[in-house]
Length: 215
Image (cartoon, rainbow, N blue to C red; front, side, top):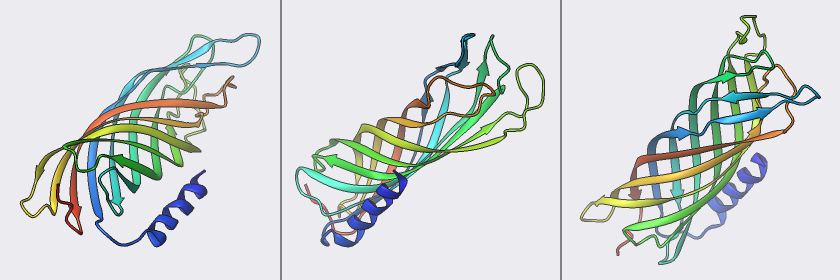
C-alpha cells in the first residue's frame, strides 16, 4: 500500500495541469479510543489498552481548484503517547507508544464555501515503542516494532480568516482517522492480525495559495 500511494502522489505532482494551487501546514491534538486484544488458544483471555492522547502535524498540497472538488496530496504524522496495557491472562508490556507516518490523497469538496468537507486515504508505516518491562515485572526484549498501516478518514475545514488578497488563510479542522495496522508484540499470540486505531482530533492550519482562489 505505501508504494501505491507514493506512485499516485508522484502522478498527481507531474501530470496535473498548472493552475490555482495551495499549500497548508497544520498541527492537531485529540485522542484515541481504548482497545481490547483477544489471545489465541484454548485459554483465551484479553489484553486491554487504555484510551490516550494523540497529536501530530500535517503537510498538504492542493492542485487546480474548481467550485466542487480539489485533489490534494498530504503527509500526516501522528503520535500516540504511552498507553497502558493490562491483562489478567498473560504477562504483556506495561505500555507502548504509536507513531504513524502516512502519505496519502485527500479530496476536498466545495472548496469556496466557508466550511468544506473532505475525505482522505493513504498508507505508510507505524512504529510501536514498547515498554521493556512486562506486567509481571520481568524484562521484555522487544522494544521497537514496525508495521505497515492504512489511513482512512474524513473531516471538515472551516475558514476563520483570509487576507484581503486571498493569498493567506487560517482554517480550523475537525477530523476522524482510522489507522489500520499490524499489531504490536504483546508477548502472546493474538487472534486478529490487524487493529483499528480510531483517532479524533482538531487543529489549526495555515494555508497559502500560489494563485488566488476568489469566492
